[in-house]
Length: 246
Ligand code: F6R
Image 1 (tube, helix red, strand yellow):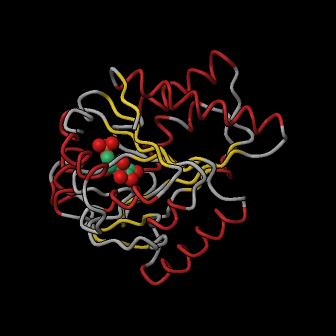
Image 2 (cartoon, rainbow, N blue to C red):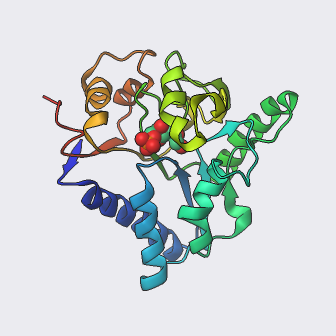
């Protein structure tokens, strides 16, 4: 667990680690494979990566990305889609090749989802696995959209969103009834295979779930507690999110 004075300092540190990985891989002529999250938490990380691209010439030509999740159903050009989020905050401002960007497809027919999910897993494996997976945490304890009840070995799949998750998303959609009930998410097992996992959380409203995730009993009731079983996970917190830790 690392505790920073504020979200900005924490975000800069995560962005610089990602930048260092990208540069290291460039030196070896290999690709950096990043697992990315959406939501309010990583916005500062993406802003710093964009700044590094614009001001320091950090190139993303050797970067492959896999996003954790997407609502289902969801059109990519909808304002609330995670495709739009990633384009707005990162991809439209850097030199990543479009074919290196992977986000679960919210437009699939229901019957095509299992094959898509298997292919998503296979693609991650084929490019050598995730070097870094960044995560936020939901107030249900979800990572990705692995809600309470998710199995530790779960893979990419269609899931049902928790009511609290839908309430938390209500503002983006103009009311809870407009929030999709489902999502396609990488599984806990998918996340676990990343060589480095960074979970970020800021603000007082995350303090109680962070306490459970870091110090609570490992249980599917709080999926983030599974991270306690990994020896390559780091919780990057601001003072407020860490305030209930003993
Ligand atoms: C987003 C995701 C979610 C969020 C979590 C926290 O891709 O997988 O697990 O990280 O819901 O969201 P924010 O950062 O908005 O508090």
